[in-house]
Image 1 (cartoon, rainbow, N blue to C red):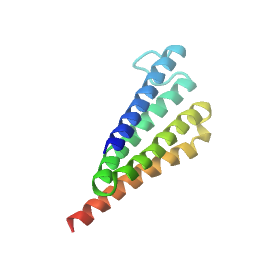
Image 2: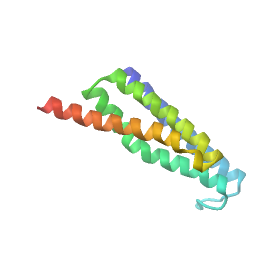
Image 3: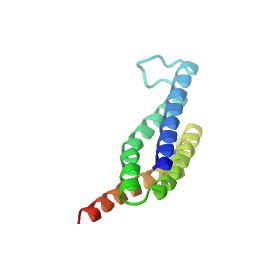
Image 4: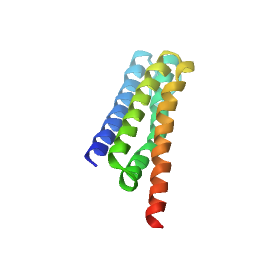
Length: 127
C-alpha cells in the first residue's frame, strides 16, 4: 500500500501545482477574482485544474478500491499512468486545447479501470 500512498500523494501534489499555475496565470493575464474568464490562456489553465479535480473524484477512490480488492502494486502502476496522462493533458491543453485527447485518455481510462476493477474485486470478495 505504500506505493499507492506515494502515487496518491503525487497526484494530489500535481493537482496543487495545476492550481498554483491558475494563480500565476490569473496574475499574468490580469483576471481578477472571482472572475474565471477574461483571457484565453488563463481559461486554459483554469479548465485543466477543474478537469483534473473532476478526474480525481474517480481516481482517488478508484485507486484505493483497486489496491484493497485487487492488487496494490498494479493499482500504483495504473496510477502512474494517470499522473503521466494528467501532465500530458496539462501541457497540451495549455498549448492548444484541440491537442488534449491523448492526455485526457491516458487519465480518464486508468481512473475508470481502477474504479471498475475495484468494484468488481469487492463484489467477488463479497460472493
